[in-house]
Image (cartoon, rainbow, N blue to C red; front, top):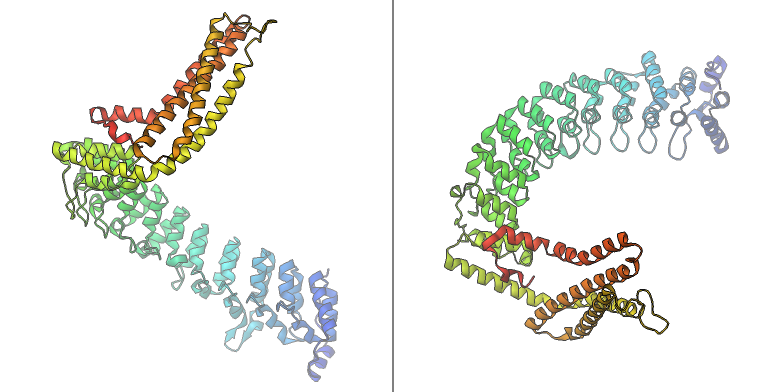
Amino acid sequence: MSNSSSLPSSSSASASSSFPPITPAPGDVQKFLEACRDGHLISFNGMFDINPEILLSTTPLRNNCLHIAAMLNYDDFIQGVYSKFNAYPRALSLFSGTNVDGETPLITALMAANDGFASSIITLCTQHGSNFEQGSFKLFNRMLLKVDRRGENALHHALRNGFIDIALELLTKEQRLSEQVINTGESPMFMAARKGYETVVQELLRIETSAHCGTISGSALHAAVRFDNTAIVNILLEKVPKLAECQDAMGMTPLQRAINHNNLEMVDILLNSNPKLAYIRNEKTTDTPFIMAAENGFVPIAKLIMKICPDAAYTPNKDGHSALHVAIKNEKSDFVNYILREPLLQRLINQADNTGSLPLHRAAEVCDPKLIRSLLTDEIDRHDQTAVNVGSYTAVHNVTVQTALSKTLKWIESFTLLSHLNPAGLRQFSKTRAKNSIKKKAIEEIKSRTEKYTSNTSLVAALLATITFAAAFTLPGGPTSDGYPLFASNRAFQAFLISDTIAMCCSLTVAFLCILTTWEDMDFLLNYRNTMRVLMWCAYEATGIAFGTGLYTVLMPHHNTVALPILVLCVILPPISILITYWHLLMLRLRLGSLYDGDLVTYI
């Protein structure tokens, strides 16, 4: 491929000016575009000499010869097109020509990551700047300022593709590139800050008219904070400190963004540059930075805010919720414990919201026993445990009305802890009302739950009955020649027979009882479920013993080191599974101690 081409002869130039332009034939246009695609500069020059108008030919998407060369990185076409200027002045229009997407050849080269081609265009236009002037306006600058259908100029594309040197060169040629904002609201400075291009940010800051805006109405500082570019953050805070107080479309300042991302280092930088940021509320939620830290449970960030701005933690949001309210609502127990331990935050413990609800009321609403226990056991004299809100309701009422959770252990524990704060008479009234509420909910659900329980239980019962029935006729060791069991006198074998019989009888009984689920009497169904549960556990335990004793009978005479562990494992496995099943209930009894009321668990 030739790297240069000679200028057309003077006769060609005079011929082109003596005769009117000739529209190229479609076939010639196709051949010309194919020569551009294949990089055949000789064919390109020859077809131009025949008809200069062919130079302006485009594809259906309005890509001219320079667009095609830019896509394929044919650098020599740049000089080839420029050399046609003397013979055909309109050749220079190709450099600023746009396709259907509004892309110039320079933008096309940058999008194709052909930075060499893009640099060649900039260099050529700079070296021959006088030829690119049209009146008082430079064609080169007009080319640079053109944007594609997305609103992106050459600077945007250079930054997007990581061509920092080209970006800096473009800014020296045309500073107005720094003012253009793409359709998504992203300015060149926002993009440079997002990608961590420190030198580009510094160059943009030297231009007073540079745009700082970004997506969702954010600023370049938002981008630098979000993507953890600390060097750029420090530069922007020094040069444009007002950006620290700007809020994006979600009402968040750069500090609040840093808190959301749990970036302790960034929070430290921003607060030390401007402590006032700790007092700025989110325009949408009215949350302060300290409340945002409470919402996410970020204790280290809260400690840093308290160190720099101690009183910033006292400001509530529009609903009157303090940081303690919010931490409890989001069940951030570590943050709650931090507030309870911090002397400067003790005023939040009894600080009511707009409805008069204390943090204890909110803890009752979420039914979190850990939070309630923390609030009640932390120097109990400081807490207003009998406080009422605007509806004259105590925290006990708030937990009582959480009917969706009334059949859970955490609700029972929460209710028990809070109801104990009431006087004896009121405590009994609250318990009676709670029991009635749970019983009512149980009546509404017991039929469907019993049917589901029965379908699963009957399947397991039938399976156990089948296994134990088959095991009874597949005796360990087999029968003698007289048909008598070989190990009939062995105690382990006798235990096998007894446990196998118990397992089969219990399983058959459960399978039969499943027929009775059509009854709708509340007390019967409760008793039915309890009976089924006991019989199934008996069948399960007996099946395990039967399996263990059966293997023990066969293995013990010759493999006693294996037989004994198998027997022990089969015997203890059912009790262990029962312990695991009721572990949470046992722990609840231990935690509540004398406060435990078994009646509340009956309908669970």
